[in-house]
Image (cartoon, rainbow, N blue to C red; front, side, top):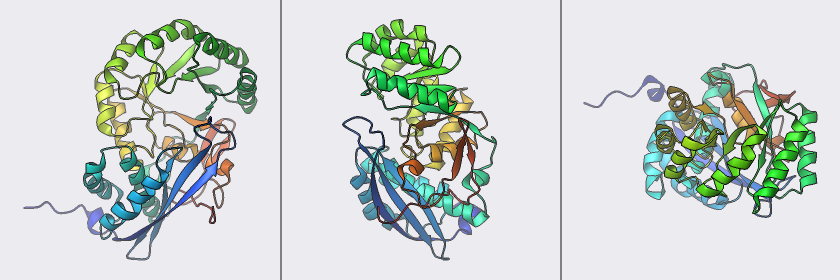
Length: 367
């Protein structure tokens, strides 16, 4: 006998439609020649009782048209008629799309549906998504982050000074220059601006192999690093396991892991100290929450990747305090694509919730 559906599923309104539109916006401070802009795929989901939920998918470079096509041609017809319940939809949709890949473009597209469903559910409850899940933190610390490997040394130092003036107690810069001596010069210069008490993290964005990483750590670890992020190809579990065993600096990764199974593999292999799931890339709020609980059971820290106006809302629901990443002048509000105020407030290097229902994202028309 089939088990009865949960009450929340039996009583949920049914999905009747999903529409999308693509926004491409130039970055105010471009992320290098390969990333001058970001892409947001705005989603709107309708239900049979007249309800609507608003969400989005996102990619900085690869596949915005592919994500939109998945949403329009494969996801929208499949979810029509399903109950508007985030967890139930996520699981059946992931199984449906798995033929095209368990993660990556598929989960990025799925996030557009999942966020819209959470937005709808929170609005029905008359609260924010943070309030619906359960707010545990009044505010969360924000760290200054820069996609700045292409900056000159002077530009990098000026950015570090802006972070200090803004009150940031933690910052992250890119490393991975062809000459390690140049990386060392840049890290030393930023540490000089920060002083001894502010936290400094570095991100190599998969630019090194294992021998290069060990050589870099011999030189750079003396600058008091809080973590080294993604030095190796993100898929190379064997190398990360070996690296963490011998690294004097905590190892952070996760922006390029897309499923709870890959996070489980890295955690159980003792290959990581800090995980950094990107809420969009893992498929939305539903899988993000599952990944967070997996990490908690293994005493692994969670530091959400990018998208501070979304990550900030979820950070306030976590049992343990976390850091929210804010790339300079790259928030949706700063890029000018929101129709209305941001759903969060940034004050004194902290993020707090603004008083808005649902997720609080409305994107400007005509972009």
